[in-house]
Image (tube, rainbow, N blue to C red; front, side, top):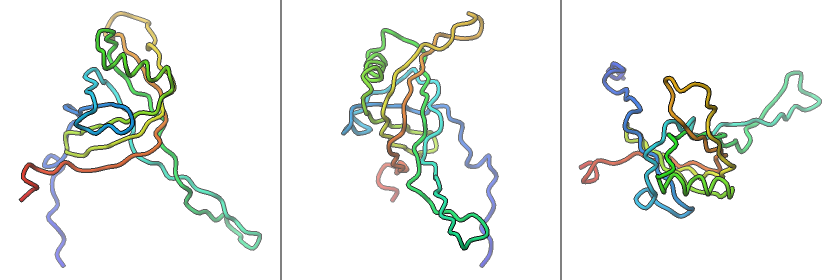
Length: 157
């Protein structure tokens, strides 16, 4: 069997510009979740594997097995906009340590649905007015992630 044609990265690589970040209460869908228009950073999204050591007395080298894995610690960054009611609702939910759902729709058509338990927020350090705007950080831990890829209109037919 012949090797597939090797594409140039410029044929498929996509910049993150245009990424949509949406949030809602548990049970929300991507269509009902509210747009967080001031999102600046969302950190890593995914599930990181962890391992348990299962070395027996008879073994002469360590042995491991895969564990359940661990969700990402999340720090979400937003331009601070106290007039944005959606962002203010998120900060309120972070204060209340609620479990919410986020949807990240990336320009390459990949979509993540992330259940996130929130644990507070803070205004980023303010040290110089030059070259930086006021930003807030929202802290959380990922409970679960589901991945999908947006299908073209008409089901791709």
